[in-house]
Length: 45
Image 1 (cartoon, one colour):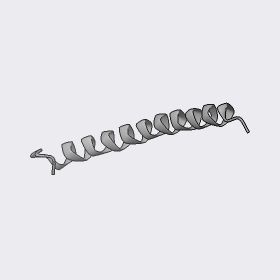
Image 2 (cartoon, helix red, strand yellow; image 1 turned 135 degrees about the horizontal axis):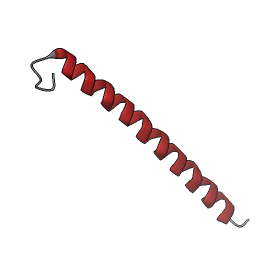
Image 3 (cartoon, helix red, strand yellow; image 1 turned 180 degrees about the horizontal axis):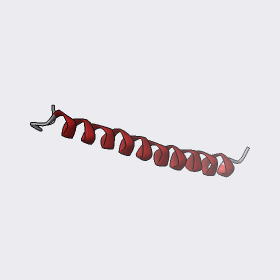
Image 4 (cartoon, helix red, strand yellow; image 1 turned 90 degrees about the horizontal axis):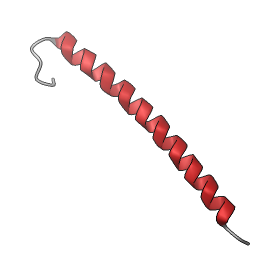
């Protein structure tokens, strides 16, 4: 547990954390994709 006396409170925070992690990973994925596209355009063969 996260130190809450009420299990419902812990579940609530766990759901918020899962949602936040998912949102942050989507942002990171978009940034990584944009960076890869930029790098591939700058490569001269």
